[in-house]
Length: 190
Image: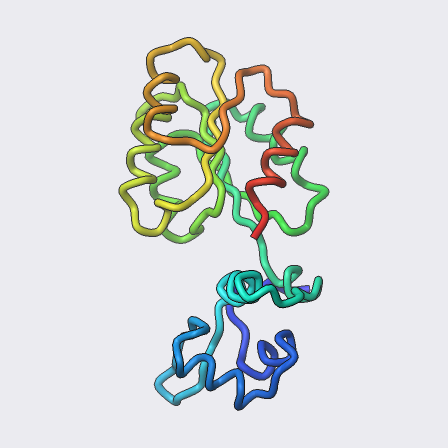
């Protein structure tokens, strides 16, 4: 199945169990976010639709949630650590992963990849985790991304600083993969 970011109003109306005209009225009233093409056709972001359905306590069909990927960016200067995390997440088809060796590479990837969750190693060359986190929070595309920090130096001043800036989870190395996967599942809930 191809994962999609946007769906048409006919499909979206079916997921909401309403008619297409009723759904279009919701768009016109601003109740549903949509992109209107130059030809007047509306495209609805899947994540936005799910969020709206949750807010209105509507049942969310599994088929709709399967249309979404959770985009996870793994930033670590050690290839072995990146690969271990990728392998741990490989069994979940709803995750789409991308990797970067350092903060600069991560900043370049973030524009196109638009990660929902970013796993950052604190100590890296070129741009460390603190610098990367500041960039993430300053960027309109990534400022709301969930952040997990991993480090082999949990007592460092950088670790204290990054916690003050704001992260969603903090794991010392060596990583307990079961706990990391649990936290990712918790944070990845749409």
